[in-house]
Image (cartoon, rainbow, N blue to C red; front, side, top):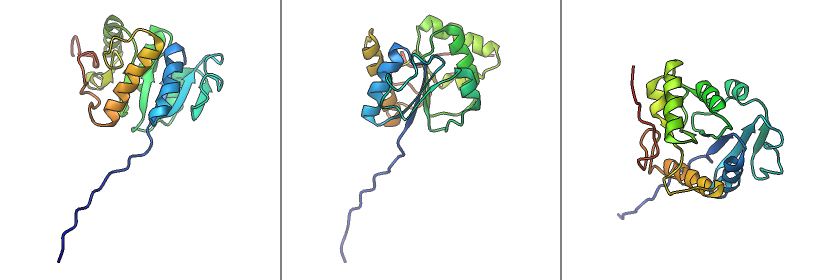
Length: 185
């Protein structure tokens, strides 16, 4: 004849973060994300950028063509993916290869103008508007970040917000987090 309170805390598996592009922002993100619990995988087609010296805390560092890797890799739906490639064409190709696959988070770095051009091109290439609505772009919380370390902080904050349920894919925390379709077919 008593009463007991039970507290149940769900345990989620360690989230995996795939950094596609190992430039300046990728390097900073690759150093910061493991400190907040992400298992980091780094993929870049340049060996001088994708190496253990630059990413000592990553669980995986690969120097391989990005699009080929995305097309052949088994990336779990629970994955967080950050697209930080070195050019618009590579961004387009990587996003097209990722398109219409479910992931916990996909984010793209770039200006609003770049994001608008890329999403228009992806729509023209047959990527669904529904999938594009889940894209976080421009990536990161709007904290006025300018330098690569600051941008990495903004991205990491957004990743934490998604992981902790403060923002879900397709439901941005702030106004700058998600692309809004300029036109739908």
